[in-house]
Length: 519
Image: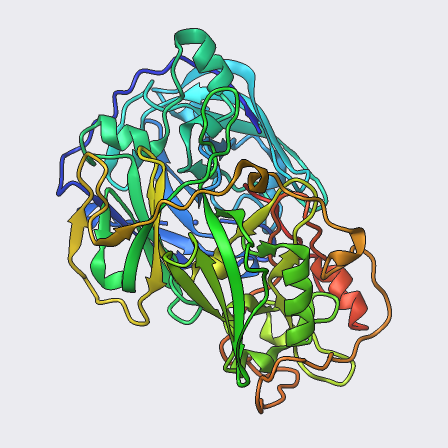
C-alpha cells in the first residue's frame, strides 16, 4: 500500500498522434527481483522482461534535463515510484538496475511532502521516501510538472527477499493509489495515473489499453495505450465485466475477472479440475510472475505434472499438455496455456544448471496454491498466452487467445470514447455472487512448495499422460522453457526461494534468487 499525498491538476501535454500510443515490450535477464526500456519513433518504447522473475519494464524520463529511468509496468498497482540516487545500496552489483533519479540535477524538481511516500509489498519489501513532482515523458508523451506525482525512494527495506531497488509505474485503477486518501481529502478527487494523464492530454480517448506479453520464445510483446491490435490475438475477443473490489473510495480497485473453470488436456484428453459451480475473482496482474490458484487445483496440477518441492524436470516442457482457463461462464472466453509456459530453469546461468540427484535438469513450476485472503492471481506465466484489453473507465476487460505469430506492424484500431471495445465479438455480463469475491483461506499443507526443505530429490512421476519426453541433463537447454530463474509471488502465497530449492535438490546455493510479491 502506498502512502503519499498531493493536489492533482492534470496538465499532461503531448503531440497528438493517432489516438493510441504503442510501446514494445522485450524481456531481459537479471538475477533478483523485477522490471523494464525505450525507442522514441512514433511513440514506440521498449519494455524489458526479466527471465529470473519475468518483468516488463518501461523507460521514462524525469526532470530537466531528462534523466532516463526504467520502471516495472504493473497492472496491479497505480502509483509511480522511482529510486533516488542517494540510495547507497544502488552501488552494489545487481541493485537499482533500472537506474536512479538525482533530484539535485533537475531544475524543475519540486518536493511535495518529505517522507510522504511509503510503498510496501506483500513480500515484506518496502520503498520509503519523499513525494515529489517534476516534468516527465512516457513514450514520447510529455507530462508537465504537477500532472503526476511520484515517490522518490531513499530507503529500501528488505523483506523475505532482498529489495533490489527497481521502481514501478502502475497502470491500474486510480483508487488503488496510496495517495488516494490525501487527494480525496484535499479536493475530493482520485489521484491521476499515467493512463489518465494520456486522456487528459488528448493523446488517447479513454482510460483503456491492450496488453500482450508475448511467448517465452518470442521474448517480446507490447502495450498499446488507447488502441487494439487485431493481429495480436486469435479467435474471439470477448469483453467481461471487472469484478468489484471495493474500498472506501471506489467499487473497483483491482483488475480481476470471473474465472469459472480450469481444465487440463494431455494425451488422454481433457478433464475439468474445478466443480461445475466454480467461480472466483482472478487478478490479471502483469506485475507478478507466478499463477496463484485455489489449493485443490494447484495440488492437482503439481501431482499431474510430477512437481516436487516446486520443481520438475525441464524435459517436461516438451510435453503436449495445456491448461485452459475459462472466464465468464459457458459463453465466456478461454485462454490455453502450454505446460512449457509455466516452467523456467532455476538458474539463468546455463553453466550452473541445477539438477535433480539423478542428473536431470530441474525447472521451476510457476503455479502456487492460494493462501490467506490474497486470492487467485494470474501473473505473467499465464498472461503470456493471452491478449488483454483493460477498460478502466467502463470496468471491463476483454480477453482472447494470443496469436501464435502476430503480424509485424499489424493494423491498430484506436479505442474511442464511450463503452465499445473495438473488435469484440460479444460482451459477457457474468458477475460472481458477492460471496465468491472473498478469498477462502487454505490449509497449510495445501501449498505446492515450502519455506524449509532439505536433502536431495528425485523427479516425481507425472500422473497426467505427457507422452515420451527426452531427458535433459546438466548444461542442456530445456526446450520450451526460457533461461530464467526464480519466479515471483503475490499476496501471502508462499513461494520457495531458489536457495531452498537448490538445497532440496542437494545442491550448493550458487546464488540467492528470491521471489517477489507484487500487486
